[in-house]
Amino acid sequence: MQPTQPKRSLSIFPLLAGLLIGTALGGAGATAMVGGSTGSADEEAIKAIVRETIKQEPQLILDSVQAYQIKAQQEKTKAASNALKDPAVKKAVFNTKDAPFVGPEDSDKVVVEFFDYNCPACKMQFRELDKFLAARKDVKVIFKEYPIFGPQSETNAKIALAVSRLAPEKYFAFHSKMMGFEGRAAEKDALQFAKDLGLNPDKVKAESQSEQVAAILDADRELGAKLNLQGTPSLVIGEELVPHALGQAELTQRLK
Image 1 (cartoon, rainbow, N blue to C red):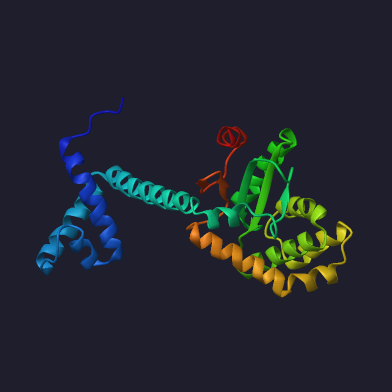
Image 2: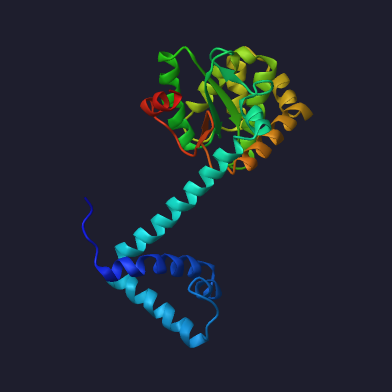
């Protein structure tokens, strides 16, 4: 049971959330969120109320902002789940024609991961997925290259897709090496991993710059936009988008 809050806090809670968010957008935004245009004197009075409340009840401000962020994320996740009900979008998400994957091709227990090799949270997710896959031979994981950490990440994604196209059976080993790399992997690191797996790095680099690889990456970006992805890792399981990493227990639960 939650402790009873003072009446003043309960009544001002949503107002302050609106004021703070509006203030972040500028004074006009703040006044609009409390009922329309006001004079400069009223705007200053509103700002004074916010400043005084921050001093008196800082936790209330944090709670207001957190509540807004949680609601915004829930709305985005709901929109993504609705997008997954579109047969064309769902087919693109679970299509393995151009997407590398590991596990039984015909499995009905599928996890789709949008990731970036230079994303620390994605590396944490990989460790969980790797252990999960070692215990669950019936699960298929589809990997969607989704580079969001700059040009270096995009180069890595293209090299990974080149590995997948040239030697699909070696993709997961390459993926494992990249995810196990300490720090941000550069092009030379990715090409060295490909070489370690018996691939010709020159051929891999040439393939990574092909129109076919660029088209796959563009298609995944377009798909991410339709799903309103906000970051990596993002997982799709069934018709649910999970905008964060999952542990083994959570993966098991959702796959049920």
